[in-house]
Length: 277
Ligand code: ZN
Image: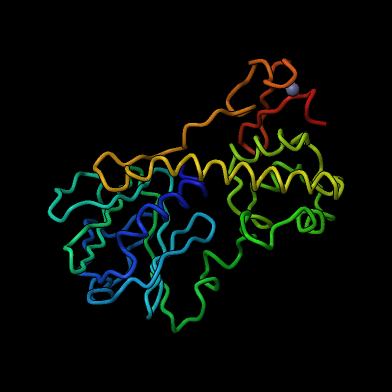
């Protein structure tokens, strides 16, 4: 599943190809994905210029003067920039065709499992942050509002395990299963610890770990940027060396004890009993 770093790298990859360009047309090859595509999207966007792109959590935002196109990659989606006329394959469901003086390019959404989404938020309905899907999101982990203090204050009354609190996304977005496991390892925190019982100092370390791990994933993903302009676009997680994730029974890279795997809320958690207290 594309996580925050993949979405951010996608945004950085496609931005230079669509920002400042004018929409020629929109092509939709089915009714929709997770939800129906917005009605009349072609009429709504044709002739309009992409002002800029942004990201909120795992939502990619393509901003126009009169509203924002909200794109989610779902479980299996990815975006590529292709030359005009590139034949569409079975899972290529949506094209935003843009042009400038140099010519025409296609921003194509491919989504085999069809859990992705393309939605329209008219500027007249207020800031896009007020959209139903965005308003409940926690702070951005790489933004200024995120800190150990925020984690500490937001968790005082929460008895759920810290791993599940991170995954819930209502305090901080973008800390998916892999990044939650890795961040808790780096901060030395047992994933089963009740969120409300973790000290401020430990939350400082956790916030630092989350920032560092996500920033590193984005940086690594940057090396795949070229994939957004060829037909073999990437999907899935960036290849990274994990400390605990997906390493059940394998010696911990720090202490050598076997990495333990447990289930927390249907998700697998990987951790080291020695290194994480
Ligand atoms: Zn260890």
